[in-house]
Image (tube, rainbow, N blue to C red; front, side):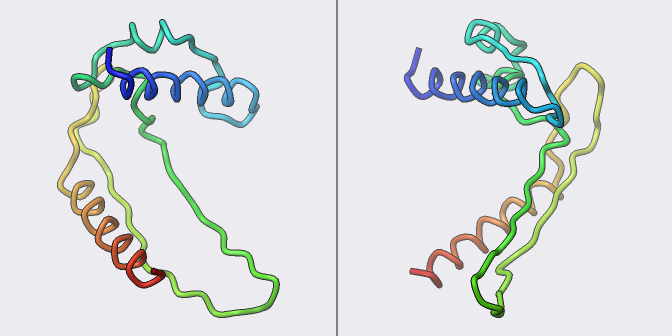
Length: 114
C-alpha cells in the first residue's frame, strides 16, 4: 500500500470526523480507515470515500482592515452529466473546460503575485 494512498484515506477519515461534529454538514457520520479502504471502487485506485460528493463547492471571502479594491482573477463552474444512482457520473466537457480554465487562471495569479 503506497503511503500517498494511505494518506488520502486518512484525509477521508478526518473529513468525515469533522462532519460528524457539524450539524450543518452534508455527511454527518464518521468513517473508519477500514470503511474507506473497503468502500466501492469508483475509478482505480479511488474509492467512494476518496471522492467529493456531487454537491461539493467552494467560496472565498476577502477581508481587509481598510477599504480597498480587489481584483478577482477568475471564476469557474462545471457540471457533470449522466447521473445514475449507484454509479459515479462521467466528467463532462463543461467540467473539464472549467478545470483547465481555473488552472490557467491560478497559474497566472501565482506568476502575478510572485
